[in-house]
Length: 420
Ligand code: ADE
Image 1 (cartoon, helix red, strand yellow):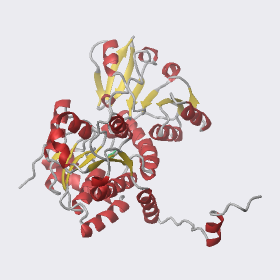
Image 2 (cartoon, helix red, strand yellow):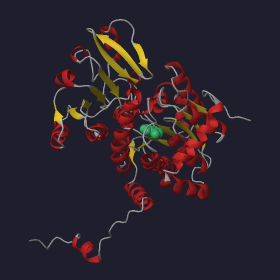
Image 3 (cartoon, protein in one colour):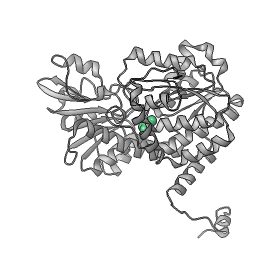
Image 4 (cartoon, protein in one colour):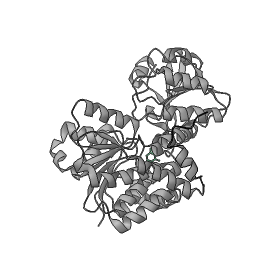
C-alpha cells in the first residue's frame, strides 16, 4: 500500500530514485552516518516532522534518518523548490509520506505544512522556520510532544532568535546554520555556484563582461560575488554593514549604494535576508533589459508588488522562470518569481556540499534526541566536537591528509614564558 502523499506524479519515481542515488555518491559523510544509524538506531521511536527543500540531497538525509529508526513526514520549505521526481521516489521507493509539488500556490503550501504537523513529530526539522512558527501560532497542542528541533538556514535562525528574544519559543532548537561545516561551505560555495547555475539555466546569458550587482556580503552573497567574478563579471557589492562593506572593498569589489548600482547593473542578485532590497526607487533607474533575481530564503527581497504596480500591463513570461515587466518603456526581467533562484531554476546546492550540512542535521537530530529534554527553550549551536568531526571526515573522504601537532608544538602552545 502506498503511504499518504500529495505529490505531482508517482510515475516520475524511477528517475527520481536514480538521481537520489547519484547524489548519494557525492555524500560520503552522510553515508557513513547512515551506516552507523542503521546499526545503532539512535532515532528509534522518534516521529519527525520535516519541512525542507525536496531535493535529491534531502532525500538522502531522509534515508539517513529512516536508517536511524525515525518515522518521517516531509513537506516543502518553498513553493518552487520541489523536485517532483524526488518527491515521487520518496513516496514510491522509500515509503515516506511527502507533501510537495513544484509550483504549488500559497494555500497548498500551508496545507502541506499542516499535513507535516498532523504527523505530530517529536522532532522538528525546519528550513526557514515555517513549521516552528506555525506550531507556535496555530498548533500549540503539539508543543507538549516536541523534544526539540533543528533549523537549517540563516533566515530561519534569525526568526528563531527573534522568537527566543520575545520569550515565545517553547522548545530548544539547534542552529545547523551556525556550524562552521555548514555556513562556510554550503552558504558560500553552495550558494555561490547554485545561484549562478540558476541564473544561467533560466536565461542562458553570458556573464563575462557584464556588470553584476550582489546585494549583501554575508556568507551567501560573498559566494555569489566570488563565483560571478570567476566567470568574468564586473561585480558590484551593496551593503548596510560597514565591516562587511570594507571586506568587500578589500576583496577587490566595487561597493556603492543600491541607488547608484541600479543605474549600471546588468544583473542584480539579492541575498540579504531582508525585505524590499530592490524597491520602487530602484526599478525606474534600471537599464533596459536588466535581470533581477533573488537567492535569499523568502521572496521578499525584490518588491514585486511595487514593480507590478509601476509596470505597464501584466508581466509576460518570456522563457520558463523569466517574467518581463515594462517600467517607463524599459524591460526588467524577474527570474523565478523572486523566489530563491538556485532551487527554482536549478537544483540547489550540489550534493558534495549538502553532505556536510546534512551530516550536521543528522548528528544534530541524534543530539536533540539525547539532550533535548535537558535544554531550556532557546537556540543552540551544534557542539563544536561534532562540527570538527564532520570536517575531519569530509577531508578523509576527499583523501586529504593534514599535519598533527608534535609534542613539542603542543607544549609550546600551552606556555607563555617564551617570547622574543
Ligand atoms: N538548500 C540549498 N540547496 C539545497 C539542496 N540541494 N537540498 C536541500 N536544501 C538545499
